[in-house]
Length: 241
Image (cartoon, rainbow, N blue to C red):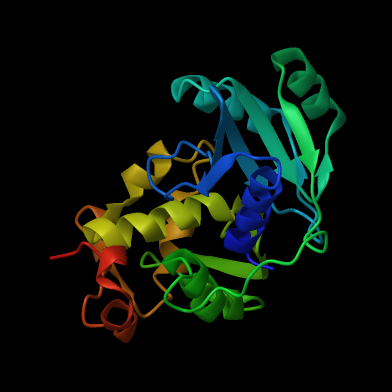
């Protein structure tokens, strides 16, 4: 199951309870994946598909969700996951009034998502990024990153200084969405949206996809508009002129 399908599973959960539920766009959602509304109630849901991975929901996630829900004037915040929640994250959730919804991919069927309906981020991730597992990538400055593992939660890598590091999929999805909507993203813009300062790794990894091209002034990525993926997707998903 892909993250977009997990989000639809969350939507279905709320729809069966009488809510109007819909997923958000990747950009400018501040981490909110689903909005559910009913009779003056507006719920902000963040979906974390961590089942089958080593990642666990932490307290920072809860704090960020609380702030995003307040920004969108929501009456409640919910963290939906199929994985594990750390004890301190549960404590923060209880303190801030955030509900935790445990939902498993096998609980309800999710309709098949056709190519034209799938997010561009999911397509790029599955087709070009997942096959990088086990490979060593070289940056423009000669430094390397060894990709240990790639799954739907993110990437595990060994950096050029030998440090084991994880980068969550969320920043990759944001960068891919920005590339397909504006045609370009810089390393600084990635840093502004990711607290762990892994922009160089994000740029290096995404530059392996043939639909993106590395640029150096300023350092970042640009969309290869001639790539077949751009031509095959519906016009509503690409606003690059």
